Length: 209
Image (cartoon, rainbow, N blue to C red; front, side):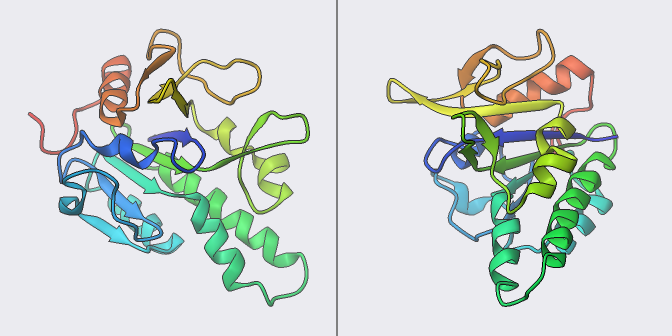
């Protein structure tokens, strides 16, 4: 069983930039919107540009890498929502929710040494509490995306610096196993990857000895 990690944050909070310390080929990147990666050398990363759900699922089945990033998984939902905007009825929302749930399941079906990172946007509920941004209540109420992921990281900007937050404060969704990650750290996803592999004794990234 693979590991699904949710990396949450608003636009500009450092989600994509957190990939900067990976070497090209160490991680499979699904670039949903096809935007340039926002750091020097990002153009050298092998990427699947504008993939659909089926493309990502098939790649995860092949499982040729030990780390994958879906950047930004929010837009898989949003793109499908706009593509089906003229469809009437609530059935389409059920189907869209099912597609995302099946993607999470595909990530969890990868082998035990594989980690899949979902970079995703957040929003606030009526009480000002952070929630995963979706396109309907079914994923929120019937599935709970963050519940399917054993690690949830919040991206924040503190004193002008981008950081990862891994401790829940009652209003965010952050969580990590005891002793795995510091409560706050630099927004370095490769450092997170190394810590997860060390903690759970997973094999190293592709390309590493």
